[in-house]
Structures are given as C-alpha cells and as structure tokens.
Image: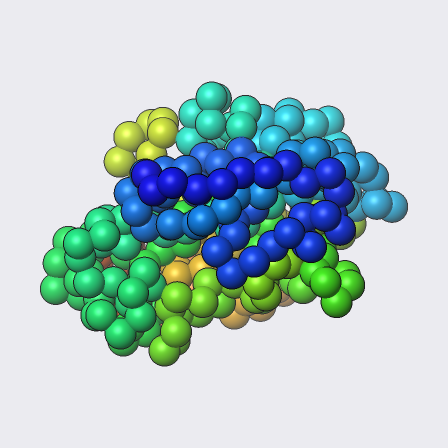
Length: 325
C-alpha cells in the first residue's frame, strides 16, 4: 500500500470542500482498502465520512429511505426491510461474511468494483484499470465474466448482491455534490462499459451518495433473492436472481426481475417482466420469461454455463414465489 494522508469530515459540506482529484471517500473500506493493498486504487488522501448523519433507515410513506452509511448487517435485519422488501434482506445475507457486513455500507456497496482477476492484478492489461491497455479476460480465464452488457473493451461483472435487489425494486439513488443534490434511478446509476469501461457510475468527481430510496411496492412482500455460487458462503454469484411476483386468480398481474453475476451492471430484465404480465402463473410461463431474459446473451470460451444456469435460476425463483400463499 502506498502512503496516503487521512482526515475526518465533520459534515457533508466539509467533505465536498476537501475533495480533490487524488481523494477517495472511505466509510467501511471493505473494498477500497483491498484495492489499495493491490495498488489498483492509489489515492493520495482519504476522507473518512463515517461522521456524516447518513446512518438511518426511515419510512418514506409506504416506502423506505436508507442512509448511505447504514451498515449492511443493520439493513439486513431492519424490520421495515424484512417486512416490505425481503429480497433486500436475503441479498445482503447472501453476501460476504458477518464481519464484512458489520463494516460495509449501503453507499459503498453501490460503488463496489469488479472482482475480475485481471482488474485486480496490476500487472495484467485491463481497460477498466488502464484505459487502452486491452482486456486479458477475452482470451484468458473468463468463467466468471458477463454474458450481458459487455463490450469489445470489457466484460467484467459488477459483483454486488444488494444492487441486484435494488434494481428490481426501482430504487432511487440520492447524490450530493458541490452543485447541490440530484437523484438517479439505480438502474441508471451504473454504466455499461462501452468504449469507456473505466467510467463505472454516473457520479461526478467529489459527489457523495447520501441515501437510497425504495418506493412503495406492495407485492414486494412476496419477493426473494436466489444466488448460485461455487460454495455455500462467502462467494460471489455466478448467477443471482431478485424476483417479485404479483398474481391474482392464477394470472400474473406484475413482476420484477433482476439478474446478478451475468451482467456488467445489475441487470434489470425488463422484457422478461413484460412477457410475464397477463400469463398464467405456471412453470411454462416462467420458462418462457427466462428465455426472453437471456436471448441477447453473448458467451466467451468458459462462461457459457451461465446462460442455462440463469434460465433455471429465474424459473426456480418464480416457481418458488408462485407457490407462496
């Protein structure tokens, strides 16, 4: 780890004033400090934002506002989340370890960077880490890489479990910068790699995430997060599914579906959701929606297993929800 300076921000305005091009904000640090040890991130100065008043979970009508500094463990067990949005609780508990969840924050989770082994190896060409250097994953070990949303410059997966659930729930990210406050839908917060994989989110330099809003969605009480991985704990998703289902008299009225482990960003399956509406709530309908969700997938040498795995995970998640009273 290279030398750096450190300070604590007393409030949001102080954090914004102190920010410079060589600065990073730090809260839990569970991702940033790892990358600093690997020399992937090399900030000259860290601003500790743990003192900012962003650590509450509060009702927002029938929805919920989640402060950016809420710890993952706190959110996973919060009564409002468990009752209204069980997929969020399940996604958090499926990620990392209890020790990491006790430190990691919601805002930091949104900023989580890829686990691509070539991105994390400072000696390997990587367009995300060093624009224009190339992408080693195309001809290398790519079993864990994306089948949706990739470009000719990058196929790295965004690894967050929480963000998949937030994408399914139409979450809104609240952002503060020197020019004031703004909001953006979570589905637009993360960027596709395109020609510039080094640009991962819509955050401008110096901006800080202040909260995430979950709108009211009554049928989200019937939701789940299903994660497929190489081992039962402390492993990133090969495929994950966040799903919610609204049905009446055996017919699907509405659905929410987002995928993790397969996309370069948390992947909202809009067309699959539309394919479900008005259809019988049965396995045939779920399998059809799964086919729609993966029809634009593009594979590399080693990651083709993700397509069938994702189709089966979607079907399994919807069958499970469809069986609930």
